Image (tube, rainbow over all chains, first blue to last red; front, side, top):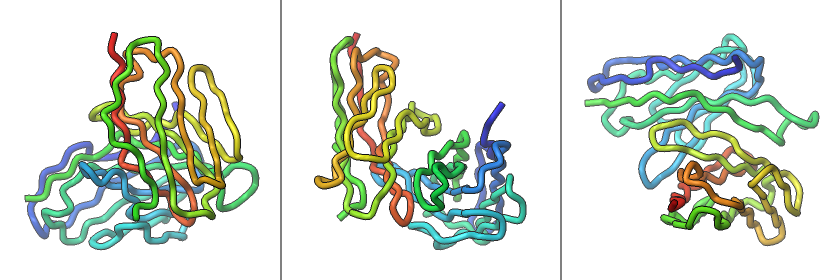
Length: 118
Length: 108
């Protein structure tokens, strides 16, 4: 079954304790991305990756790190979590359509990780 | 100004009616436009994508794009209670931007 998986699904942690949220896709997609979703603010892109070893900042990258060493995996790292990073996090992946590198990405989302930082 | 704007709703329609959801965007260079449906506590699910001006129909869903007006809409015909969800408009320009969503309730 084609899917995007995230782990853990729920996490409660304390300020400053490093954590990693894993994301994996089995669709051989080039493009992967991380979002956070907050009430009233919608989905905001944190980081994205166009392919292995290629990552770039999204709209809200502060306090986050990512890496893309393998095509299927795109972990999100919070080196020193703070309470304002309490949120619902989604990983997404997509392939590119039509041969164009920068158009027509239809993203498919993982189930989400609900993170609480106290 | 937000990159993507949607009416937050809530929008209520009776079962069998047409639901109309609207979205405007600010980046004239945007090339790809998407509608996602999100049930409470679940992840967004892609329901429509549109890349050129005009209408695109898929079953009960029709997406409409007008790049000159920077406007994209979603029509849901014969609305069903199972269509009750939040609908997210997404636009791909330099980055992906999502609207905050419109909450739709279909009343049986």
